[in-house]
Length: 215
Image (cartoon, rainbow, N blue to C red):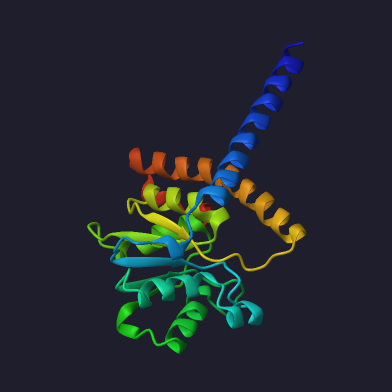
């Protein structure tokens, strides 16, 4: 009986935790404002890699995250772009691709900063921290479903920021369902990973924690 009772509580806890992660994903998808609605002036737009800019259709339609960042820059809502994201494979880098598109749209190198080593949102936030001044007003540019997790990750890293969403890149309903399921799972693993990392820093074991934990 004791084992069965513990199993029931475990299953209930797992279901509640999953429901929380799904709620966060759904809320982010529905409530993250569009970047076209941004009226406040910020110092830096942090454009997160992992979008769909590698697709020719997205580049032609200018519906990627980088295009939303460029629009903010052109509207003088930000003075610099920080592009973050490491290699989706061993040959390329998300940040380098974003920078290539930004340069083609006339953004000077003096207003671009790249972080090319991160492989996750938590690493985006942690690895970008040295290049983001504490007193800078930041806005994160990503897709709506990812907005709340990105914002939570940067707050966790000590660089709190606002967030806005780029245009929907035109995913099919099946693709959208996959993205939402993946984002829900990402919340599920990011919360304990970030908590473990922070606990290690608190007790003086931060130097022993591999950044791979945050991948």
